[in-house]
Length: 366
Image 1 (cartoon, rainbow, N blue to C red):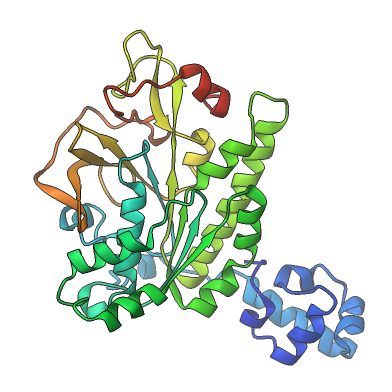
Image 2: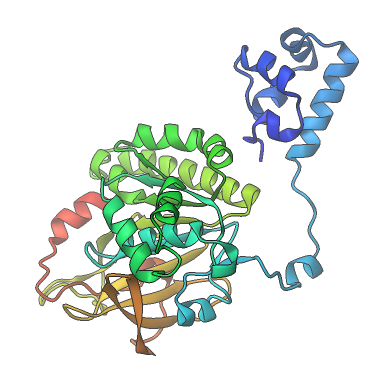
C-alpha cells in the first residue's frame, strides 16, 4: 500500500505538485524522508511536516477487517463471466480485488476469453456488466478490434443493435501494446493513473509469460533469479491495485513441460514429462485463481478450475463460437484427481509436437 499515490492518500493537489518536483510521488517516497527533509521539499513547518507524515502513514496502514465482515455475503464481490456453470462453481464469477490467471496452450481460447470479458465489463450492470472501462495490456499483438465488435454484436445482438452503443463500448476498452519487459514495468508503474483516468473496472494482461520468456534465458546463470524478481514485482503491483480499486485483474499464461512422471497431458509417446502452466511453481502461488484451458479434440476444449479459494476442482467443456466462449450442455467431465495447481497436467493437441529441450531450456521446469 505504500506505493499508493499521494493524491489518493488525501494530500492536496497543490502540495502533490510541489512534492512531484522533488520526485516525491508516492506514500513510500514521502515516508522515506525525514521530517526535516519533508519541511524542505514541501515548504512546511516542522509540526505540519509531522502531521503530513502521520496522515499519509495512516492511509498506508491496512484497515482491520473482522471475520464477520469477510463472511457476510456481498452482492458485488464477483464479476460474472456470463457462463452460468462456471459462475456457479466460482460462487458468482471472477472475484473482485484478486488476480485470476488463465493458462493453456496456444489457440485454446485465452485471448478469446479476454476479449469476451472486455465486452462484458463495459455492459450496464443491469445486463451483468461492470459499466466500466477496461485496461488491456497486450504483449503479443494478439488483440483484435474487429473480433471485439463481432463478439459484442453476436453475444448481445439487442444491446449492440445500434452503431452508437458499439462505438461507446469500443471507446471504453483501452489497449496498450507493451512488447518488452521494461515496457510492461513502465505501464504497471502508470497503471494506477490509467485505472483512474479510464474509470477501469477490469485490468487484463495478455500475456504475463510472453515477454519474460523471450528476454530471460533461464539456462544462463542468474537469469532465473532475475526473472523471478521481475515477476514478483509485477504480481505485487497488480495485487495492490486489484485490492485498492476492488477490481478483477486477469492474466494469461503459456505452457511449458515438466520433467517427471507422466501425467494427463503427455505431449507424445516416449516423453518423460508432461505439459503444465509456465513460469514455475513459485509463480503459481502468486495468483488467487487459476483456470486452465486445454484441448479435448479439434473442436472441443475444456476449462479446468485448478485453483480457487472458493471453488472445487471442476472441468467444463466449451467451444469457441462467433459470440465467444460457449459452454456445452453436458459441462462437467472428471479427468482424474486434482493436483498441485502448479503441476496440473494440461492437454494439448494430439498432433502437437512439443520439444522438451526447448521448453525446459525456457523455464527450467521451475
